[in-house]
Length: 349
Image (cartoon, rainbow, N blue to C red; front, side, top):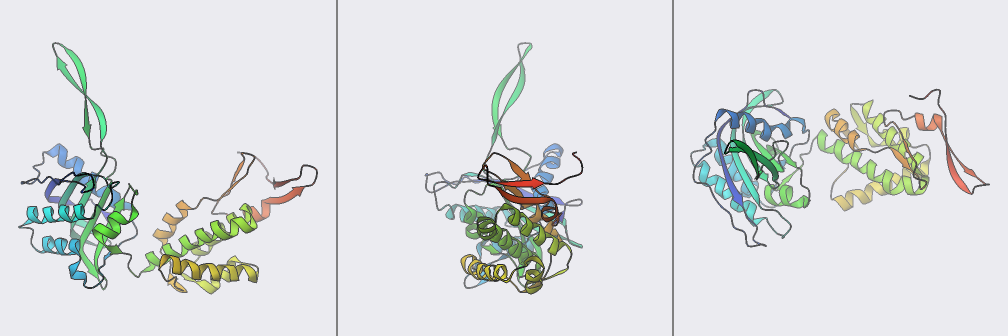
């Protein structure tokens, strides 16, 4: 998560990246962008805005030597001395081109920038920014001719959000440089994060909180809902969120004791946890610090609803773990040969 209040751009260039699968080639600029005041005031927040709400960070990865990670190498060079900024930016585009390993990967504009005075946590730092613009939109341009206005269509970049982007901060911890990334076009989840940047989550509270809650969401979807119904599915998710809200440290044994009433449910959870770790090649810690920022973000992804085949949906409040148990009753009607839910309430809103 960054703040851009004092941020500035010193160097910026735009190239075009092709795709070797459809015979489109890279096209390079030979000079930096020259901003006027209006374009600068629009471009700076456009590029940095997506990183203002990001909690998760990454670190560069490589199977043998981290210094051989291409983007890590290029960014390190620029953060020390950006004299060869244009040439290095071309290397970035060439590396991106080499990761175009399927025809579905889109061509687009690549923007490379040098940022200064970006606030990260409690200090300011420089950063290298790399952005790929894959989608453009048509818009009408008006003009005056022979005393009357007319229009024609142009294609341009929307200023709402970048398609893909990363910031490599001139800041590091024991695991390496801090990297932030966004990807709003997830047609290939491996392309930007794994292939181009080759980054991984650090071993911190953000990662552990994210991994655990995502595992619980999958457990609820794959085990609880099919075997115990929508009400238990929603109850489990609400209890999970409540457990994390009330604590600073998560302990797996404490979690199971509070969330599950029956031993068989705990066994199902333990078995699922082992399979989940194996399938996703991760380790779910038995105890870890809870990240409030990640919890808030993950909570927004949780859908606590009971969907019925009669075109009726019951939406439950994820922040009220006892509401379903206290005010929602499930039963079976012998006359209609159908299940039912009975909802108790005092008044309608």
